[in-house]
Amino acid sequence: MIAHSTTQTLTVSGSRRAGRATTPQWIAYAAVRMVLGVLSSLPRDASRALGALCGAAAFRLLRRLRAVGRRNLQIAFPSTTEADRERILRAEYRQLGHHLAEFALMAGYDRQTISKLIAYEGLEHFERASSRGRGVLVLTGHLGAWELSSFFHAMMGFPMGMVIRRLDNPLVDRYVNAIRCMHGNRVLHKDDFARGLISEMKAGRTVGILMDTNMTPPQGTFVPFFGVSACTGSGLARIARKTGAAVLPGFLLEEPGGRYRLHFGEELAIDSTEDGERDASTNTARFTAVLEDYIRRFPEQWLWMHRRWKTRPPGEPGVYV
Image 1: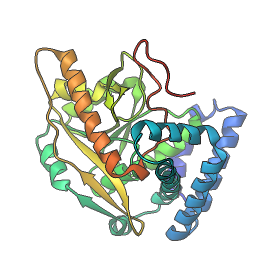
Image 2: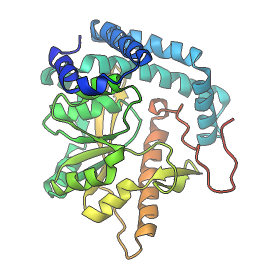
Image 3: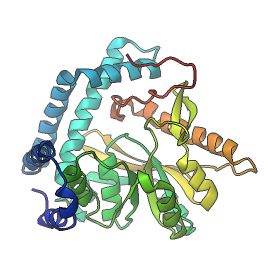
């Protein structure tokens, strides 16, 4: 089950906000606790198997999300067969089930246990960037086990900040964040994005940014993503240019046998000229190309049901029905 200390954190620090929750929110929160409680009570293999069944059920039941996933795969891989795209989408739902189980279990992991499940690749890139003392911005996305990645990295002695959007349900939001922050991680909310990131970089800390979600201007700029313009957050590029922080990709990817590997890529180049807006666009496009490369290599592990191309350039029609 979820560690008792996590529950205490939720009750004490979250009581004021939790008091504003509505009855439907309490019901949803109870359902989340029940599902995670069941998954956390099982041995890992059984929990992951049950999670995979939940993923398969979601694939069948959530028709609108399934339709979005099919459309996104059609946009990204127009030359592949419909059968191949369907295989990728089904595999993604199975992976999401695995990640749900891992989230339920991870509060009970100790360092010895988690070290047997996850290995580093390219940790030297992170350590070299961190040693400069100007902060590290980890370019990441909804690829692989993104929740487990920061949890593992913190447990191994590298706590970090995470830029996230508040969940609509304050009870679930507080509960999830209590687990995320068990080993020293910090939550930075998007409503305080710029100021929080600049402060973290000045302190020489590490922050992970999920950079694969749809945005709207002026927070986002249009850059190519699988050959199609996608409105993409430019905040990471702007903060990196302003602070001199290192930017490097980081993804926790699942491997055969239920193990994971946390990949850190080499530090990415940052354009810094007299034209700040052009630099923001150029660097955002460069970061997005890196994300695309990882997704192409591991398509079964990306969150295809997100409406990534929802915001369109002026005059262009929508891509979703």
